[in-house]
Length: 228
Image (cartoon, rainbow, N blue to C red):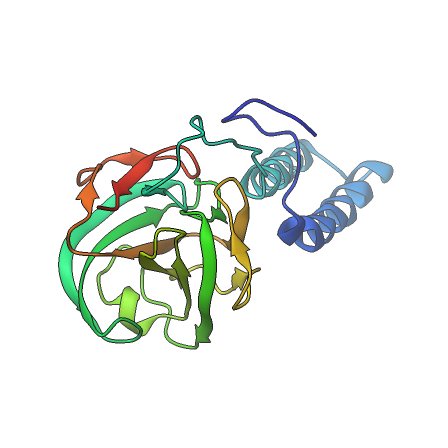
């Protein structure tokens, strides 16, 4: 279904099973309250609370259709997730590059869109999943200790970046759609993380960073960096 950037009319496929369960619970709780004569004012409180919960889950699993607003994507790194920039720093990356990289970290609150997009055009060179803990996603140690998925991508210009989808204290499922050898394309979904979580993007140290600490970013819309 076509739609404008920033709007949504569909439900992410990752949420369909959850929404079915929540809807069945909604009916199981409320139908008995209103088909018998035993209900009172508290029944309307229960109804209001369960309507709010049902609405929240539909909101959480919203599925925006977005299109990067420029056709010039050479050297551009686009935000793979909605959220807030919580780290921009030069670090030693031990798992894949094993050298110095600039990491840009995006914290996704429970109210963020939780679909993830490819940040660059190119070819997927590595995909791997690592089990771990479930620390709060805004903490730095979540990048190395939490359950996470690593995705490395080489651009047509020969530059290589890597991102991690990181589970949080509430997020207990990291979904990655791509595999090694797949083509990555801006505007396409890379995966999904359920509930509050984090995405880290590792860039070459000579990259031009286009965001700042505390900035709100929009997946597939905000330019994070430009590769030299």
